[in-house]
Image (tube, rainbow, N blue to C red; front, side, top):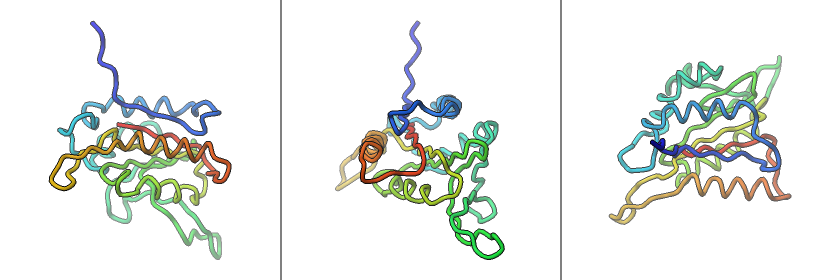
Length: 183
């Protein structure tokens, strides 16, 4: 009996380097929750917080600090600028962060591509201290309505194409490696 092939996909950038060793562990977490988070049909309508909630305990087991909620003390923040006495004056939020791997993780759902969250994630992570690798998880397919008709945005394909263009171009260089995950 053949097992069903996973719909969880990922691509690492730059493509001239192998994925960091920890990526396989992170992908195992996504695959272990595939039945709850997969977007291969429109039956799944989890928002990004719902997806992160499904992954949270396994990400914590891997060593990630993970956002626990929307209240200020439940957020994960990374410093950007330091002021007097070495106090971080500017900080940006990230969904999860692994100190040892210097890895930030963002989970996006409906606004991942259409709402430009992917672009925002790329820029903000480039300013965060000690982020050497960024993982951005986006829906393989995001189902919505436009003009009264069903519309499918292939967020993973779009995000992967943009990442490939950026990491292949000489005019722009991000200071971190990137993994795009499609769930």
